[in-house]
Amino acid sequence: MFRFLTILTCAFCIISTAAIAQPDLFSTNPKDDDVQPAIFPSLPPDIQDAIIAEAETIRNRCMTRSSMPIYHDCDCIGAKFLEERAIDPEIHQNVIVDKLLLECPNIPGVAGEAYNGCKRTSGHLEYKTAEAFCHCVGNEAAKSFKAHPVDHLQGYQGYMISARGACTKKLGL
Image (cartoon, rainbow, N blue to C red; front, top):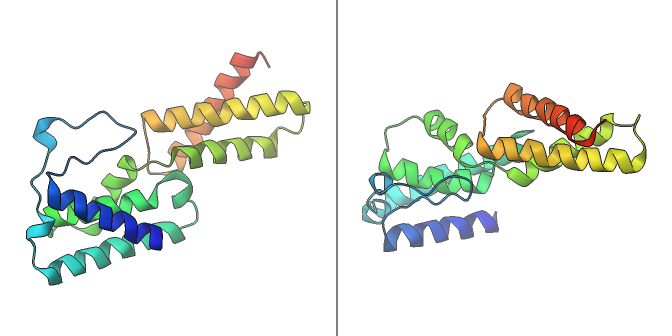
């Protein structure tokens, strides 16, 4: 909770000192057309408080869903929700969250989930082979998810299956 409030405070500081550039480590830099004016600081304090509370609720909801924090960065979703809500107070929460699921991937979480899933199903391989194979599967799944994040279970599973196939070929298994 403290980490999220720190992130929200940092997001507020960034918003109040400059235009919103919406940095994302896993995508290309935004074009000049994508930069929004600093809206949040100009809102009345009661509206700011409501937006912060709503963003915190969204972040907490993300953290308590079974697989959501594995595949998505809930702190990122909460912080970016704050920005999006300030820009458009009328848009439905689900529309914002659906967009942010694609903007806030949890790449280490995806890699770990793919690795652990592989380890559970690779008992037929020798230890060293299984370790190399599952390490490869984790990396391949994470690379695919980083390149094309998805917001549904079938997409995640597709990346895991593709990663297993690529690593089987790569390691000659």
